[in-house]
Amino acid sequence: MAPDPTPIPGHKAVETLVAKLRRRQIVGSRQAALETVLVLRQVVSKARFSNIQQLIVIIREAGRRLVEAQPKEHTVGNTVRRVLHNIREEYHSAVKVSAPTSSRNVYTISKFVLQGQPRKQTVGAPKSETTATLKEDDPDDPDSFARGIKPILMEAIQDVLDELETVYDNVSKTAKDHIHSDEIILTIGHSRTVEAFLKSAGHTRNYTVIVAETAPSYSGHDMARALSAAGISTFLVPDSSIYAIMSRVNKIILGAHAILANGGLVAITGSLLAATAARAHSTPVVVCAGQFKLTPLWNLYHDYGALDFADPSSVLGFEEGKLVERVDVVNPYYDYVGPELVDVFITNDGDHPPSSVYRLIKETYDDDDHEL
Image 1 (cartoon, rainbow, N blue to C red):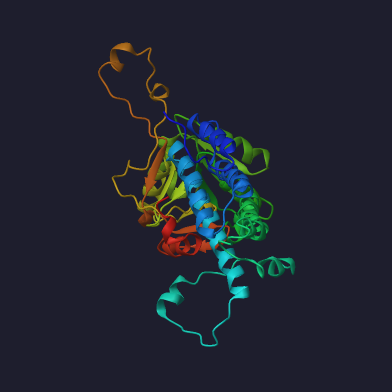
Image 2: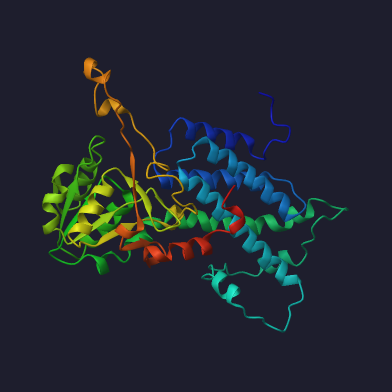
């Protein structure tokens, strides 16, 4: 294969992360998102550009390489889209400082719909002083635009990094409003976001958690150990008992691998079983996830379209020689849970029903970046 004639700035960092993603050396959505932000920060710091479009092309190319390395790790693409959104936002703010402002404000329905929550602004005068001298495509000094705007763009990327680093605390801050004393909570598998959420509520509430063991990965064992060590009353049950105990359960709390644009989610295997049993018993289903898991994709294919598959030998060992020859063993790692089975998403930006996910995605990403 011929080498790329126009290598990406920070090429080594991008290729290192590509290799890690392909080999599954990065485990967990948040870790993948953090690694992606750090690599994009290197790409921006080393990039040479004379206008904002050149920088966007560079970031999109780096993002495309990362997404192709592991298409089913959705948080990688989400993080690239979020960085692009923040960079455009900071660029437009910088341009607006030196551009003459119109005294006439035009209000339209489309502008009202597209207007999201204002991002936090970094206090300090150097920002406006730097932006006042910005000039794109300067023939005398092509690098002047990059020098002037890079400090602002680094702040935009740092915002994304700060959000990822504090996501567990921000999701957990409303835990005591959702979990009450003497409740019985069911969860499945081991989600660090759900673990932090339950531990936060455990400081002020006495309640019981039932953890489904999530065969064949048995990640529920790790969750049960972590909650028990935190002093929370915890029971570990096999997956086959979920429907039988559902009548005693007050609430189901699930983690998510990705939240799709239609309000559905991709979650650990067994989540669909638990959510369907909850619907039969009118038990509320709560999903805890950071906003970096919002994915501007619909479930376009069938229920297995966005799923990943694990090693089938953990379901049926190769020592069962005669049987293995006669059956095809499928071991899906994730379930697709439809929006009709979910009551509320708890994110680091508050609580939202499934019907509001499209609005959150509209606020978080730009339409141009849905396809990298």
